[in-house]
Image (tube, rainbow, N blue to C red; front, side):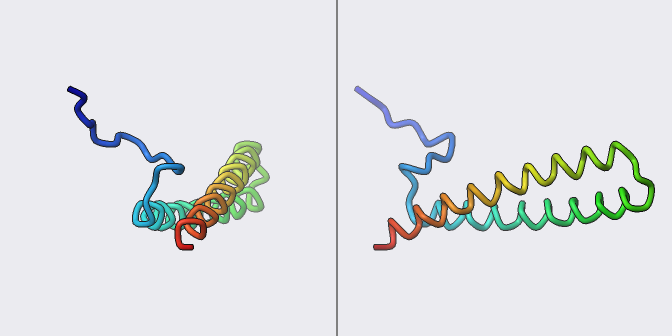
Length: 83
């Protein structure tokens, strides 16, 4: 008597093409937001040379790196499923 529970989280290995496309759209939106935040933080850093904005730039750059890597994984999985 096993009942199937609805999926609670995104698992790349079990994802369908539609789910991957949805994640790619979310990834694109988050990447754009991160780039805008990075640019705003860079402008504030240049204006005031604050350590806080320097740290924020480093954190945003790290998150941007992670988002680009996840986009690469999603794209590879999408290509694999499309074949």
